[in-house]
Image (cartoon, rainbow, N blue to C red; front, top):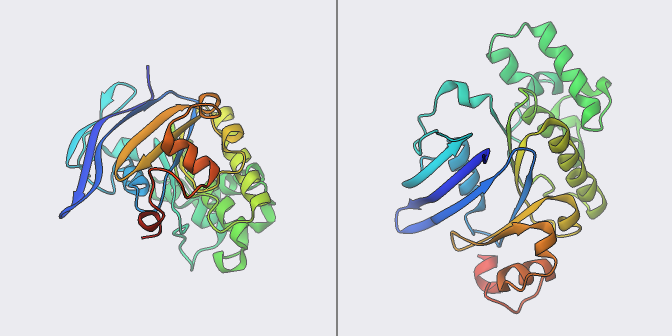
Length: 253
């Protein structure tokens, strides 16, 4: 059974159709890289899955159970989903450990226990536990991404939604972050959907790849299939070519 199943989900903002009947499924322990040009609907898709946006139509289910397409979700669902936002969305006045443990504390965990959980997570994302008392402003871009990821996995979620986890990072650090995401997904058995613009080594870092353009899912398959499939949208994105169905003017808008 699929961990996540999305069936013909749509979302519009006025006359703009951000999602146009998107359908896909993903099993537990699998990681999916969602790629596409700017304004393709990728981030809107994640926000509909997490419940920040209510979809206009379609169906979303987790482990075979419908969770609703509106933003009124069962409270128990919140802890099953972890999300890394593109701009990290830290509380600047709180230290690293408290940012990581924010949801744990909100759920009633004692602060000393929550701090211990946060400190244990830092080495898992490649940071020393001593960084727990730093503040977001003290961290480099790469460190912030790792702290954001630690926060996303703090509640041991079944589903991880990552919005551009490598944005603004150099290619070497981007590859390391992608490898960390895949490794932690395999270890925890979580289902991962990652919106990414990093094409370097993408077929090695993720199990599956999905291609979005103009609110539609144009291709979805395994990373191995992506290496040879002749889908025009897929090939243009992986090659970084100006030639193909994605207009460079539209992609830059």
